[in-house]
Image (cartoon, rainbow, N blue to C red):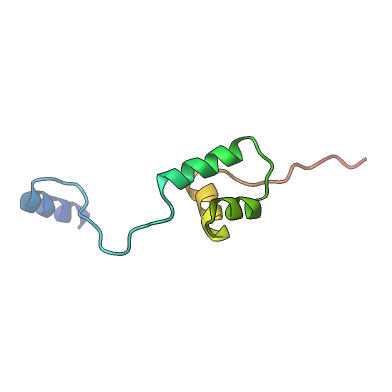
Length: 82
């Protein structure tokens, strides 16, 4: 079915790219914000809550950028019991 739709779209438009999607565009999760988050995360041990106040964006958006866009995974360094 997907191949048929692609062929039909190519015949109509002359190209096989996706069409423009309807809906509200992302206004906060821009490349500028992602670059700032990456720069802050690169060498710091700052909590994400502090970053949200600095960049003036929501904590949920920071987590989304870190996990899905930058593909950073948070973990706690474990120490050996003494």
